[in-house]
View 1 (spheres, helix red, strand yellow):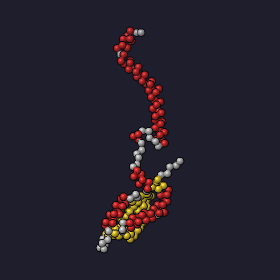
View 2 (spheres, helix red, strand yellow):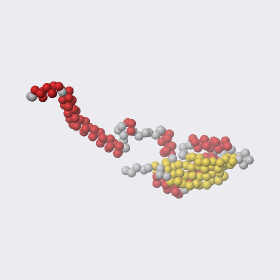
View 3 (cartoon, rainbow, N blue to C red):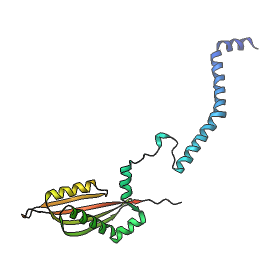
View 4 (cartoon, rainbow, N blue to C red):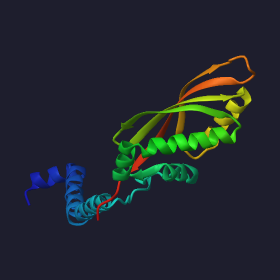
Length: 186
């Protein structure tokens, strides 16, 4: 071996050792690690296509049982929700439910009027107008009952007037949301 080359190698042995170590690591990476990483990426892709999550930080959040029950109680299949909304059945159900609730709180329904039905991409919104006669305490009890109920009913607006007979007259604009369930194709 050339004495000048041997002296240069002795002087730069850390650099030669690092280059050799780099070559060994690159060989191990290409032979063992790279195929394992490709298999992992392929498994993640296949799992995500199936709706599964292998990574615990990416798992879908679970709905609390009460929220799941509320959503399930207020959902219909998409086709059925559109058909019932367009035919007026959902509005009639809203008026029936409200009339029953109002009567249950001791108030009297003077007039009902169906409102517009709005077909949204994920829900149907049904509106109605009611004229009610009753006491203020009964109205507060009705609001409490609606808040504690299992329907997605909202009081959009109300007007409370006192005709002077001890009972108030109430104009009530109400809406109900019916969620559309997506049906999965097999």
